[in-house]
Length: 384
Image (cartoon, rainbow, N blue to C red):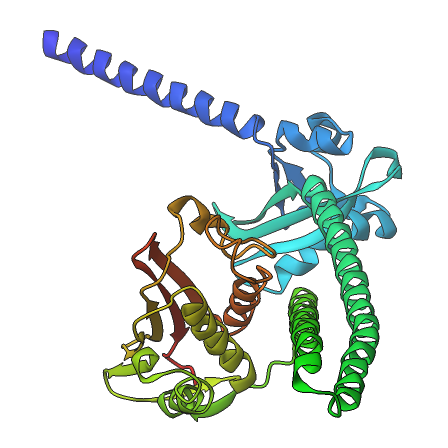
């Protein structure tokens, strides 16, 4: 007898639990940000509308129980274009966009919607979920405007840099030509009278060359920033390419005690890269290795791995302070211990842009008075 009462109590608890869960689900459904409703496809009756329909200026009562099949065709087409999308799929459609007019047709809001066709108790229903994306569209619009302004600024900057660079070249060329002409006139003078002039001419030529190098770097940086640098990759032997740079441009210029030693690790493979851009990167890093060290060889190591190939260049010079490493690739930045050494602070910034163009990476490890290692990593898998 008591067991029967126990069963009744258990059944009542289950009913209460089901009722509580149902009420929770209804509360969640009513308060979702998305607009959710179902449509009895056969009758055209709108059912189970969420409170978020208020986004469009309606209440649930304005929609629930309405038969959209009786609405004028123009209104029916505007409000239920999503049914057309749903009918194209026997299961569901998602991530479609549609504009829904607000109450009174004052304006239309953009929505992203999903629809699901399903059957319940032999009746066909359409579940509609609409997500208001007006804020997202507004942000995207503002972002596009910002990007457009950025592109315009980049174009203006690139144009200014190009014009300024070419304008500087003209007077520098005149100065250099003037020095050469004056050197010709001094050839007939005694050596003791020529020497002071020649020393001054050498200083002028050195400064002219330095300014020309600066203009070249600024022009390269401007092109890279405006994405105007030509990118023409070729399938080449990276090892042979580096050997040619070392032998033709460095080992013949420096004494035996300051050669570049090249080590290759792994199986050599062909690589797709732009020889002008990568050549500029390697030459710039090698020039820095010589500039910021005054003794010992410079080491280059090329290592072929499964997914990438790395080019590591090591010198044993003055190194870079740890606090300066994070800013090393910023334009015009120079480490605190390099101000007595000529340089523009543009070289590594340009190198990074060129490496980024190849979808590669560049890393610098350094210790003051012990040396620096600059490593370039280029992707190898599917590179060709």
